[in-house]
Amino acid sequence: MGCKMVDKRLLVAYRNLKEHLWINSYGIMKILNQAYPMKGVTNMGDLSIPMTRQIIQDKLTAITLDKDQESRFQHLVEKTIMIDLHEHPMVKPEDPDKFLDYLGGDNYVWGYEAIRHGGFTAVGTANFYRGLLHTEETSFIRFEDLVDEIDMMLSDINFQDGVVKVSDAEEIEAAKQHNQVGLLPTVEHLAIGNELQRVDLLYNHGIRLAGLTYRRKNYIGEGQQERNDGGLSVFGIEVVKRMNKLGMVIDLSHASYRTAMDAIDFSQAPVAFSHDGSYTLGLQQGGGEYAKGRLRRDEELVACARQGGIVGVTVQPSVVRSWGSELSIDRLLDHYDYMVKLLGIDHVAIGTDSSIGPRGSGTISGLESPAEGKNIIRGLITRGYSDADIIKITGGNALAFFRRVMQ
Image 1 (tube, one colour):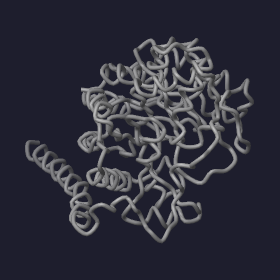
Image 2 (cartoon, rainbow, N blue to C red):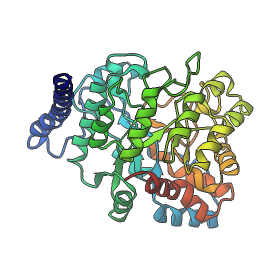
Image 3 (cartoon, rainbow, N blue to C red):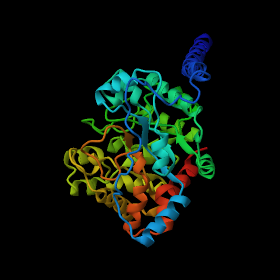
């Protein structure tokens, strides 16, 4: 019996060491390859693939303010620590057909310019794209591909001026003080299979917020589009406890109803719906079947807030209506109003789920990319929110939430 226990422990130790060495090998090779020949141009990506422009110059302002409102806006831009809980800062090629070729490369372009232009001090990075090299379903991405992408991002950050990795509220505040752009490493979902120690590996890799599931079932629980809702698994309960112990935020944005409610019940720390909208309002706005399968019911949102959690409002147009047409920013602002009325001002935040890619139909006018993030401040001004409340929604609430959860 003793020999079997020793053998098991040795096996686990070997597996952990193997993954640790593998995870760090990419970053080491990246640094060796880039340190001297690439210094100063490390964010160029594959020069043979034209990339989407991060900023569209001379674009008309989506929301017009009067003189007094414009003065308030300028003051708020200076004062607020603007945080996006969920964003995709990897810049995509101009040609969508080149995306997989781009993902297969070893150097990505990151949207620091767009983030800064949008007014954000810190953004959650929602990593997952590289996983699409080996599956068309985001729910089934490989852990190895996920960590590869995180490595590439962290390596690139190290070579940028005015860009830092941030891990908690204090580091985000420091980034604001030093006029830096902060990237908060997060993942769309854990992608750990049934290996609990991978939660620790992701944490040690800088991940501070992670989704439990995506659309489909995994070892942790049910995704939002599964036929049957079995809720959180026994393994999922272990994952929740582990994330609590580490101080990693549990994100329920793509969890099924039962999985989300179970996670709220079992978690000893507040949780997040980092990029979501209202199911009730979504149906009223014509969201149809998508609203039924993706948006959150009032009882889920209220349960999250009662526990001290937070809800980030997304700009994804499919949340407020079916894809295929450009929508007014008023549709998005309606969701902010709804969330504040339902949950209270202290539990609402920004969670755009925006990305930097080809512009087309199916977008919110004025929030087509992170570069237009300041329009959220403009919109909240027009809806009659006070400066104090706007500062809370655009970043203050996220900072307070991080202090409640992160260690």
